[in-house]
Image (tube, rainbow, N blue to C red; front, side):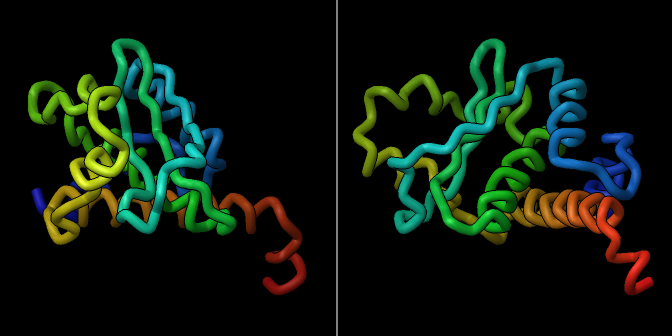
Length: 154
């Protein structure tokens, strides 16, 4: 299956339609994964080191930790990218290294180097970014649908 097909199948699997809110998406991902999903801003996470967000899985929860930014759109893209990895099944099962257990023992600077996305051109990163873009479009669509924009300019 190519990336475009995988992304289309993932969007269809969410069963949210063409437009949805962020909260609708969050609930859908939680339902799909049968786990609580929490999004947490970490003031100490430094985007300048190349780490904007990361997904950690505990025994019961999925955590998306993201860097602070003044841009709502930028923050949304970090978070949606990590959601996309979950939706696409990246790191499900034994395919993902168990780095999470080591985090408390690794100095923050080393941790950033270790966990930052090293290969932005990999199929998994391209697929996650493509799905994140589609998710963002669905969320934007719900904002336009709730506004008078289409009544005034349509």
